Length: 257
Image 1: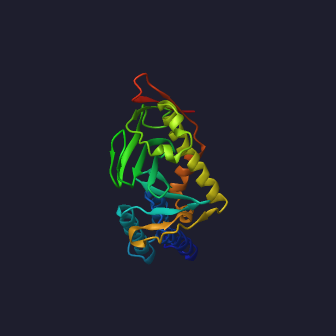
Image 2: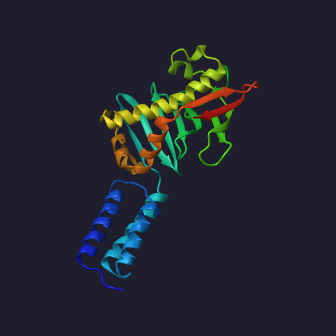
Image 3: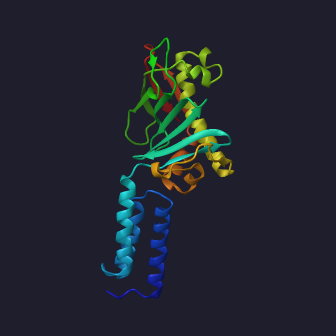
């Protein structure tokens, strides 16, 4: 096997520098990015104790540590709307804050389709439905696809619809149970589309709170450099969902075109 020439070394340095820049920007990546560089180094004849392979090994170790660390939270204002994005295990969580005490979270899978909706009520009070505790998270719906990949139909379990949501969405109190679930599902995709447009047009600003770097909080605009999160967000922004409730009103069917 021939030793690597100067062009090989230059190309290797560019590839390794790109990976190091991704790590610097807290972008998580896996073998999808590492394997092509590893293969290039082997084919071009770099020895395992070469400077280039040592750099690659260090990048791989750092990538694994980053993968296992608490995930980055992208926080900011999308044209004035408080939003937060997290990427966990291939799923994207979009959080919208309302009135500083109500949070609604949409969980999108790797195909950009909704798998769960939660609400978090920060104040403490009794409602006619159930006691609402400070900081408690209440699942609204669970979505169970009938197929594992490229699914179009899923069963939906309706868990809880706190009355606080009536204050968040105008005319929400006038909607029936089926219409409320349909609204919440479509609202998640609308928020994804809204955030996409804000990112494309640089309509992102910082929140009024100070971000905590030790808790991996990053400016929302930084999501532009997170390839995986942006991919799911883009797919979610284009989906067209349709929901219909079952006769028992505690479950239903979610369909995607």
